[in-house]
Image 1 (spheres, rainbow, N blue to C red):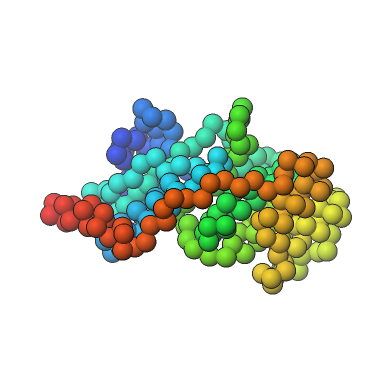
Image 2 (cartoon, rainbow, N blue to C red):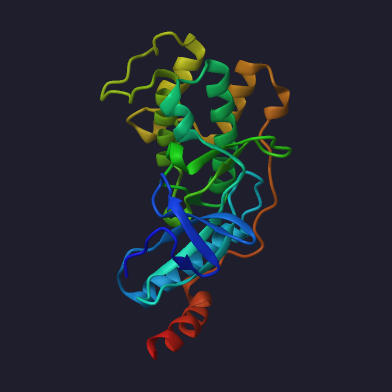
Amino acid sequence: MNLAIGDRVGSYRLIGQHAGGGFRALSMSGRARIEIVDAGDFRSRALELLRTSALVASLEHPGIARIVDRGVLPDHRPWIATEIADGVPLSEIMNRRTLGVDEALELIRDVASILLHLHDRGLTHDALQPHAITIRTGARSFPIQLGGWTTLRTGDGCGDIHALGVLAYRALTGKFPGLHTPELIPGVSGAVSSLIVRMLAADPEDRPEAAELFTEVAALTGDRSLAGPRFARPRWTPSPDELQPIAEAITLPLKRV
């Protein structure tokens, strides 16, 4: 089943392609990103989707995009709808210009806050890219929103720190870091360069953790409010055994169609 602009998925109408894959969509409840899980064994895919949805729902950080709907297509491919905040994708900003040092530090601070929330729970985003981040306009609570949850998995978070380092390097220079990252980034102060270079370290043991990023950014900006916020821990982290009956309840009726 090939989807096209104008088609409906659940209560959503597809209105365009999303830079990170999938579609931008609109319903009476607002805008969303529709992500479709690739074809495969339907039962295991449905279980994976349910588990991801439950994990994201259990997170309580104001910068995390909520999964607002989910379902299956007639060809049995699962899909999820993730809210899209009012704002501009970071990818669009980076396509137009580089960020200043202060902007880059704010970006590191805000993403590190979300990563700290994930890593404290043994989770890793595993796909940290500019298109997954929305810079909110007129935000009253948190300046950014992070989405792209189909890759959410358990892990130690070292890959997320490296990905954030790559993102910060690109935002400042307009280029990807080379295989041999310089000790200093041209045009960037030594302290900020040192922080980003450590995030890009080849050895995961040499990379700072999300909590360390908070501490260092606070020192660089003189902002004592960045001491490392803690949000409520999830009340429930579902296991595959707990979700199996739900997956069967969803898939069995569809198998009969």
